[in-house]
Image (cartoon, rainbow, N blue to C red; front, side, top):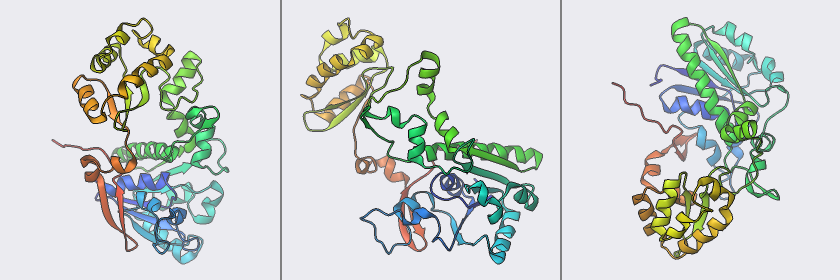
Length: 355
């Protein structure tokens, strides 16, 4: 799809490389520029204790840096700067995440790049919208933008989302901006500067939790897996065989169907539980009643019955179980990075049929 596109990536860690991966997996030539003096992208060294220390790349690095060319250039040195400039003069897109203070030193200032290539679309990720000198870290932004304050079991046991969610949100925002800029260039012939801050990407990702505060004055609090507006939605229950399920009941009709499957018609007619508002207000009592019945049922048999009755529910899987499904197996990609074998999940999950 992007076979004629040349993308340069000077960004490191996750957000920028994830955006670069989007283009690489769709056929673009993506050249990742790394600093030879630092050993390259810092995530090359972010290894689990179980990983081979002799391997030049970590599992973390492999997740977003496959299907790319890797070149080590010191952009403070004249010869390497010239090699970079030659590449930039031909490039369609450049993805960066350097601090502003380093832009001139590295030759990555927007005005300089624009003079090198007026058609270049420069996508830049910064940490904070109004504090460009402050470096950003996903866990700090999860804390500052409200995610951590509403994640966990209670106020004394907060948690972060166990993937770098803010980086992923920023990568999606950058991809969208870059695609719009490419569309505009197709008619105008002109390049563009696209900027995304992790801070703003995080705030955008709050969606309904933001409007719960902006419109209803409700501050989200830690609810574990629960949903502030719906019940039973997010409740996790143990089954007879030790398996666990999660319910995602979002309507009164679905709740009545759930009660029918469980053989609990009295719950459906109970005044406390007839409406969603009642169920949210009495969710502890509801969960107790459901848990007692669900504990007598086999997980997989129960899930089949719930699906047949159009009751939203699913098995609680570990990551190895999730990656063992037929769908996940089709998404696993294999290849080499710096001569080392890697396995990773595809970065793109959409399919397009052209007519």
